[in-house]
Amino acid sequence: MPSAPLVAAAVGARVSLRPNLSLLADRSATPRALARVHAVMIVSGRLVEDAFAASRLLTAYAALSPDPAAAALALLSSLPCAPNSFMLNTTLRVLASSPDPAAAFPFFSRLRVTGALAPGRHTFPFLLKAAARLPLPLPVTEQLHALAVRHGIHLDAYVANGLVRGYSVAGRLRAARRVFDGVPERNAAVYTTMVS
Image (cartoon, rainbow, N blue to C red):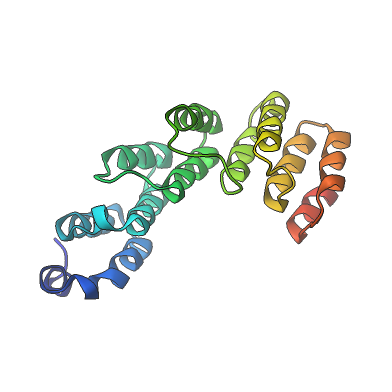
């Protein structure tokens, strides 16, 4: 059961609730505490009105669950609102970091087919991370590279960093170097990945 001040705030004034529920979701230390915040978000209407709050809830469930991928997918499918790109990318991040990173790719394919997510500079790093964690990362890295070129974001420093890492993990250092050399504005992450 939510604490009395939280319930009073939820019933009395939604405005005072706005800054607190996302923060409470972020700071929940147990699944039970997070479930309480989730319930208040549903009762207050915050889950439907505020995609940012829903995305923070999604991130918190993934962090606290013993099976983050299942928790993220379950919450995403139960949302009363259409997920935004931040929520979808958060789910991709969770899937890419899960024990089965290959699960990110069917999810991404569904998003592309339905038009729910246009791949962008925030999407590719998670997909490339998942590709680098596969037993055979090269074919997937090459496909993602081609898709990034098609969308015109292959020169973005964060996308390029993922490509450099993917090619390096696959043992294709020349391909990694070509990507590195093609990036007009390199950041510390790209340099670090190339050096390591």
